[in-house]
Image 1 (cartoon, rainbow, N blue to C red):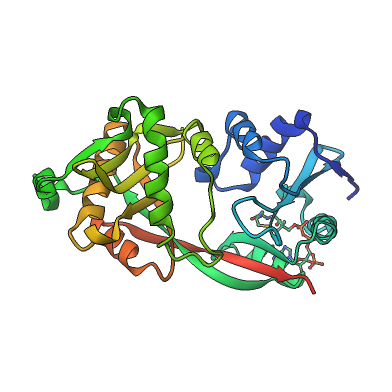
Image 2: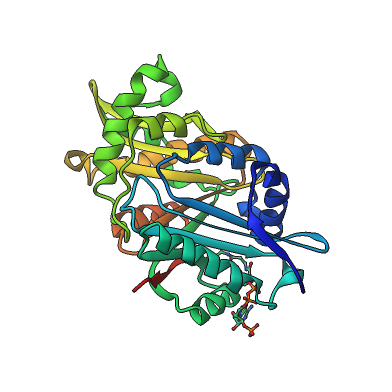
Length: 312
Ligand SMILES: CC(C)(COP(=O)(O)OP(=O)(O)OC[C@H]1O[C@@H](n2cnc3c(N)ncnc32)[C@H](O)[C@@H]1OP(=O)(O)O)[C@@H](O)C(=O)NCCC(=O)NCCS
C-alpha cells in the first residue's frame, strides 16, 4: 500500500466527512454542515494539526490532534481513522507518529484518544503505540418511543411552587444567555470529570447556542422566582439519538427530584419530535446522575475509554 500524507485543507472537508462516516458508528455520523461549524469553533490560539493520507482510491485516512482553550494546554486529544480497506499496513502508526511530533513541538505532554470499550482493534493499535487506559465514562441510552409514562403521571405537579420552562420561552433569549451561562458554569464545576471541568467562556456558550442541532425549545430550566436553579438540554441532529449535553441542579435544591423533572421535560420534547432514542455520557463516579438515569430506564452502552500516552 502506498499513500501520500499531507496536511488537510478546507477543500478536503467533504472527503473527510465521507471517511469519518465510513469509520464511525452510524449514530455518530457527521455532515459537512456540522463539521464546518465545529471548525469555526476552534480558536487561533489552540494548537491543531490534521493530516490526510491519499491512496490510489482517494482518501485513505484522516488524523488530528489539538489542545483546547478550555483545558490545560499541555493536554492534547488524538484521533486517527483509517478506511477499512487500508488498515494493517502501518498507516495509522505513521499518522500517530506525525501527530505526536506536532504535539511535542507545541508543548504537549499528554495525548488522549477516546475509544469504545468494545473496540478491541483500536485498543490493540493504541496499546501497541504505548497508550494506556486512563479512565472510563458511561454512555447510556433511553428508548424514548417506548418510554413508560405511567410511572410519571402528572409529574409537573411535583414542581410545587417552582416554574419549568424552555429557553425558547425565556424571551428575549439572547439576553438570558448570560444568566444561563452563569448557572451552567456554577453547576458544571460540581460534575466529576477525569480531566477536570472544562472552562468555557460566554463566547463559547453563545457559539454553542448557534450550533446545528442546538434547540432553544429542547433546553429546560427550573426557576424559583427569578432564581434559575436547574437545567437540562438536548442536541438533536438528524439520524442520531438526541444527546443530553448537560443536566444540573443547584446544590441547595438537590434531593427534591428536580433533575428527574428536568429530564422528563426533555424526554417529552424528544418524543414530540419523533426521535426514537436519547443518549448521555457520565463519568463512572457520577453516581447521582447515573442513578437518575437508571430510574428513568436508561441502559448502559459500552463505556467510553480514555486511552492516554504520556510524553516523557
Ligand atoms: C485503529 C486504526 C486507526 C488503526 O489503523 P491501521 O492503519 O490499521 O494501524 P497500523 O497498521 O499502523 O497498526 C499498527 C499495529 O497496531 C495493532 N493493530 C491495529 N489494528 C488492530 C486490530 N484491528 N486488531 C489487533 N491489533 C491491531 C497491530 O499490532 C498493528 O501491527 P501489525 O498490523 O503489524 O500487527 C484503524 O483500525 C481505525 O481507523 N479504527 C477506527 C477508528 C477509531 O476508532 N479511531 C478513534 C480513536 S484513535
